[in-house]
Structures are given as C-alpha cells and as structure tokens.
Image (cartoon, rainbow, N blue to C red; front, side, top):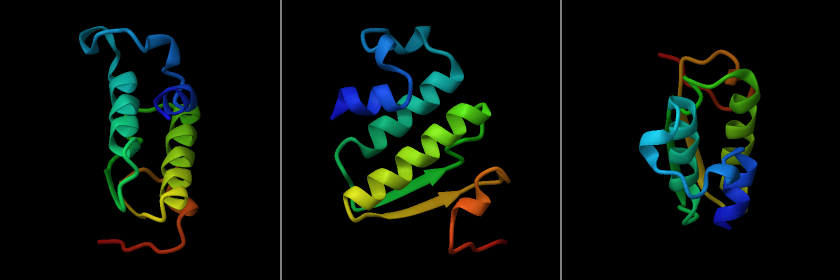
Length: 94
C-alpha cells in the first residue's frame, strides 16, 4: 500500500530520503500519502494542491478521489485552486 501511494505521487525514488531533503511540493505530496495510508473514513484536505504544478495537482486529486472511493470515505477539500473545482459535484463557496 505504501509503495503504491508513493509511486502514484511520484515519490517512490525518495522513499529512503529524510524530510529535510525534500522540496515543498514533495513534502506536500508526502503529507497526502500519510493522510490516506490508513484508509480513514473522513479525509479533510486543506489546500492539497496549492504548491503543486499541474501534473502533480492532477495526481494528488486523482489519488484523493480514488482513496476516498476505495475506503468509502467522505472527502472534503478546502481550496482556492480553480484547477480542481470542476472535479467535484458538491461545492460550497463562501
């Protein structure tokens, strides 16, 4: 499970790295992996794609949605990122 998550987030080659050697984007993706690895029933993602390029933004969003579906979890994403708004059915804008 862990290796698959790291591979999906393009982090598998950094598996044995220390956190102080990772970039901000790599740390953000690692945080996503850590948040879903235990298959929680509620996934709260606060700005999960804010520091990511378009490619990694898509990877993270796809992973979050697949993990939520696989574990029958509710996924709540808080974001200002207009790239991902269209990927959700239920949106609450404040």
